[in-house]
Length: 381
Ligand code: GUN
Ligand code: FE
Image 1 (cartoon, rainbow, N blue to C red):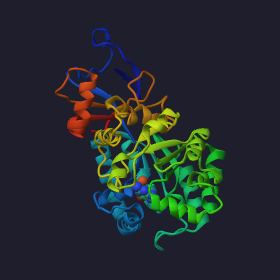
Image 2 (spheres, rainbow, N blue to C red):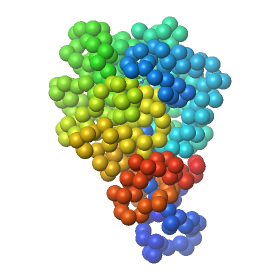
Image 3 (cartoon, protein in one colour):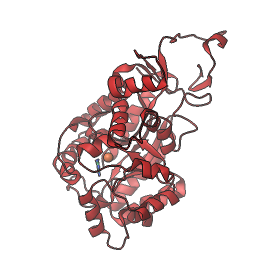
Image 4 (cartoon, protein in one colour):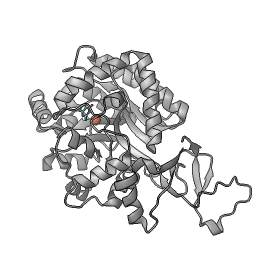
């Protein structure tokens, strides 16, 4: 592999490699893999991993919202942000799609840290203008305006994108979601949110939005659906809703560990992928318990008892599948000439074949196999 600035410029067999005028680093006894992609993760929940409740809404009220309030303390936000990014890097994640909190300043700190590290990330300020604790509650206009400010400040700066982040329909008014949806569609910006994760959540949305035919329809009416929208979870969907997602080319972040931890339900992987939906993998920390995407590949395998997620599919979900989910498949997700030099140097015992190596990574070694991490040609670990 030849790297020129931040990109892979050539892939050629070792014997044919022309080393003239190049700095040569010999890793021929190691395995090179594309950097891993986490399509759904909450920075502000790093410190509450493993805080357990068997229901999403109870978990949010008990652990998550109180922790997110702590991010108004910017010293605390800085400490956790540093910790979070160093752990992402240690896990071999070279692109992450991140929810911060409602705090504009804490979101700015996340961007500053990612920028300082030259890290590749999509980052968003969480928006909530109803049904949440008073300390986190925002005014509709302020929530939207602060998001636009952050977008103007950071979107497409270095390796960064802004992602509009209305948390989920139960905590957002139609007015807020429509402002975000209209702006994002008009300016071709990313949006991320949660969809149909938990049965009590689905019932609550039905009660809060009686004019909509379904949870997905709430988002459709507010212009939230689209090819640059990433929906977390998407578990309890009707065929009608699946069709809406297909028609709008909305992308899905599958979060299997979180779905098991919070007892949310089972993602219909085969059905959704067979229908043509594009799916990536999300750790969903702290609904998920860790940042290790190899572990989440294992969970993607374990949750599909029909065997539809084998080791190749699982690996795809956190590499090229993740890149497609983020509309970045021409830029990242594989070791290909012309793409960004985001890659891992990995040490494996088993060299029998690709299937066997992937199995060792996914089922046994996980992130412990990672020795070095490069993002845009720069060594981060
Ligand atoms: N739905 C709304 N907010 C959240 C969150 O923080 N985590 C998860 N897993 N689901 C959510
Ligand atoms: Fe989430």
